[in-house]
Image 1 (tube, rainbow, N blue to C red):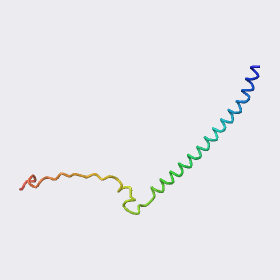
Image 2 (image 1 turned 120 degrees about the vertical axis):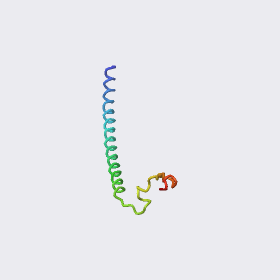
Image 3 (image 1 turned 90 degrees about the vertical axis):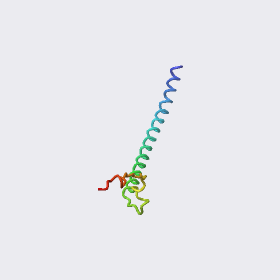
Image 4 (image 1 turned 180 degrees about the vertical axis):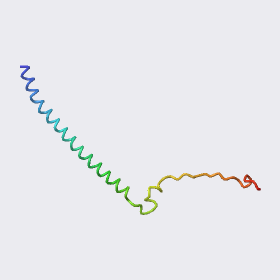
Length: 83
């Protein structure tokens, strides 16, 4: 009696496991497609931003950088020596 129940149980669980496996494979394929679409859009946006000509100074990324003050030490006139 136990062997019959075990065979029935395995007979029911194998198709359920196979369906679950196929669902996982399908979801994996769909995720891969979506990731490829997102990557394509990201590359397209980056290409547009890179090729875009700035219309004014605030659009130019070069001017978005923080500016550091540059200190230049100049000698005092009395240190130059009056020859």
